[in-house]
Picture 1 (tube, helix red, strand yellow):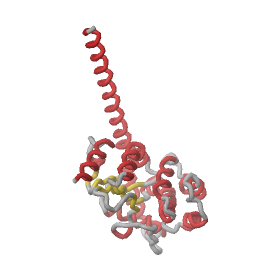
Picture 2: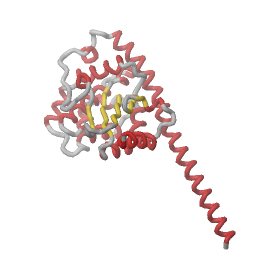
Picture 3: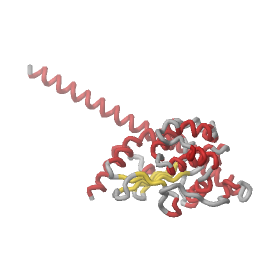
Picture 4: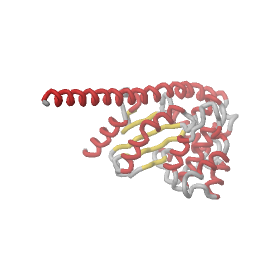
Length: 258
């Protein structure tokens, strides 16, 4: 009987060891996906800077011409951040993102449940900064149009839900599907209460286009290397190759305890 118990315990330990290895492998795959997808977005940064410089003064939407209309509740320097979460949270996650960027979607897939949980518990506040990196790399205007629509959703009080819908329905990077305002409005139908005449008018008029362009220029002048750029209390977490959703949660909870 004692030998059987010993064998059972050994088998249980072996199962636990196999499970731990599977979890570690899963985390490694998620980090690899984010890093690999980021290569495209990093290359996009260099390209878009050249494109904007070459077309300075020629493209109204990229030159920052026209009045800058920040979305309702925008905060931070020049009103370029869309906040999500309680102002009193002890930790702030700053996210620079492009809705066309596959690396941003990879980050969402890996970290979204953890970020949502920390925000809902009042331990984390997120500041979203929207940029249009892929438009400059591959052409088109899907990054701009999607960012404007997200800002319109912020006006309506539905930014978090629409933000997630955009990533859940992100087209392939080479497919500029988000350039179609009608497509963005159809996606708004997935968020209860968002598809209203006011939202549609905001999307169709490009009410926040100049604001998105201003945010993009702030991204460039900030010296960031690509999207997503994710800062926890000012520190770039994606430069830490050991970072995982579990570690992010630990750091935020430690900060919350003081």
